[in-house]
Length: 157
Image (cartoon, rainbow, N blue to C red; front, side):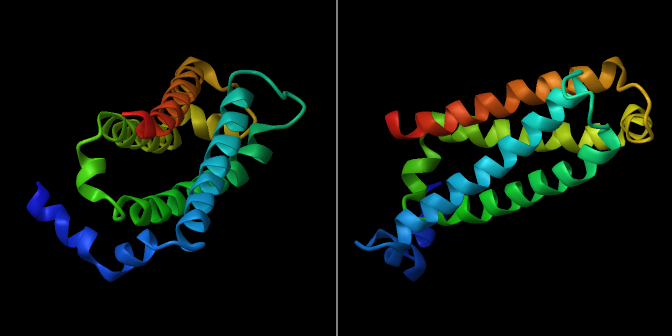
């Protein structure tokens, strides 16, 4: 594995990020900002699907919050990749990092599956969210909160 990851570490971009200066802290801030977009949008939408914020229709909240979450995921993946290349061999051996990646993949999959459910279309049309959608929202809250904890734990392992 090290032979595959070492070229990333040797890349000039990775070397530049390891240098003193503002690049790495700004990149880290961008990653945190993108996580804020994800968590803020997903938690709000999940809580609405679970019955909170009933004054706001799922049809009003769902589409923009889904787009904000997708943008957050895109930015987090891009910024996360550049954070990863600073020490790819170390991160690839970090259990918390690997758990975080698995949870993020699970969270994205859950979100994509949610959009395929007929209950999602029904909720967007003004109908009841239904049990499957509520369970998906509950699972989403658990997955993304766990991914956040795993991400914070990376530095402690």
